[in-house]
Length: 117
Image (cartoon, rainbow, N blue to C red; front, side):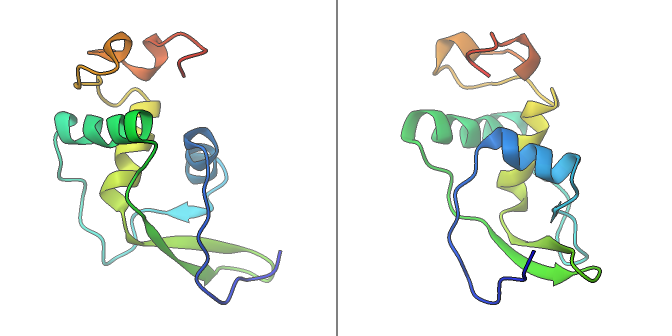
């Protein structure tokens, strides 16, 4: 896979992003310059809410870093908190705190129906 040498806008499903972060190791949300996750469950739920209701999560930015001959990793430049909110929810890290959509209120990701996931 060739390295991308310019900024590119891309969209990705939450499921694919979580897989690429957790299993594939293609994204590094914890480079040295990033702070720890600091927001509470209501704020993190707001990120999920924004995606579901408004079909938008504010842009996140990554820097492509070569790590071997044909491999690279995307280091988080901006958006760690937003990305972490998504991944933590999908890993049952917190209960959804927003009232809308009602079927998600106070539920873990694993408690949702498969079609809702």
